[in-house]
Image (cartoon, rainbow, N blue to C red; front, side, top):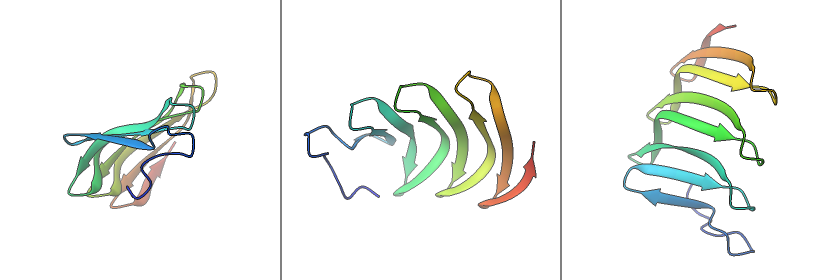
Length: 93
């Protein structure tokens, strides 16, 4: 997951500060950010569009989707919401 360190432009692909992992787009804006424990996504993660606008918030446990995932449309309205248990959808709104 952390193989590529920089884009051709020199922009960082990711930055790991303690247990917080941040991914970047080629333009330098944040692509995704969240906790990274034992080399796996954990806890709440936030995902953004290339414009910087919030796109999705979701929860992971040991690298697997676990809990609520909410996706927002380009007008910042909830597009849909799903609940996961061990990477499997259990409820969709």
